[in-house]
Image 1 (tube, protein in one colour):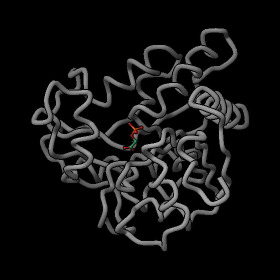
Image 2 (cartoon, helix red, strand yellow):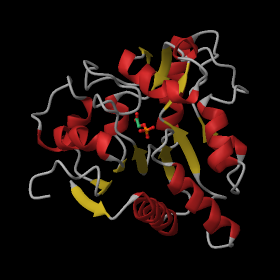
Image 3 (cartoon, protein in one colour):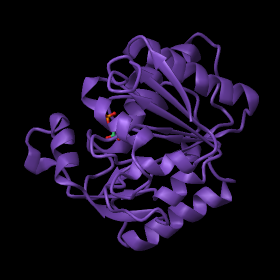
Image 4 (tube, protein in one colour):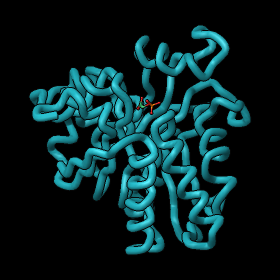
Length: 244
Ligand code: PGA
């Protein structure tokens, strides 16, 4: 794994943006795997600004998001479709038909998981997958205990995850209990993975991801098996690492 320690969140966001820009510069029809959450917001802001300045086009890019809540209408402001629209899709020249998220409103959710997995395969797989890291080691919504052989599936959200995401909702009981997520096998199939980790509250999780034995009790340890992972962590997130 290729580890870069960034000065602060702004620096991390600038470097994450540059990484994505480099990917698109090398392959204009890149397939990007995208993440939601607090961490990638700065990266999306920088990408939108580069587009605004005329320096970056997503015209030929296709995107697949990691996950979506089950049960929130797509127009709900806290759906991940709405997050992506607010932070990226409405600000750049991505074609709507090329932006994919699992449909958490599908009548047949099991069929939706299979559809999403097939769509990814038909697009040729993900070139660059952007990932955040959960405090409990989750990647996407793959909570502790998820088999590494998992493909896109329905999950019951961990209480810790619901607590972490409650900051966006009026009250914790409003946080959905289920979601659809790419599986760990789906994530590991990406040709390259870019992990963004910011803040002192993620320091322990980052250390575990890098140094704990590979175990599905801490899903992010699966990344140790991937041949092409870049990690951008700010100094706060890196403070528990040996030598820091
Ligand atoms: P965060 O979420 O970026 O909001 O911290 C990361 C995650 O839970 O995967």
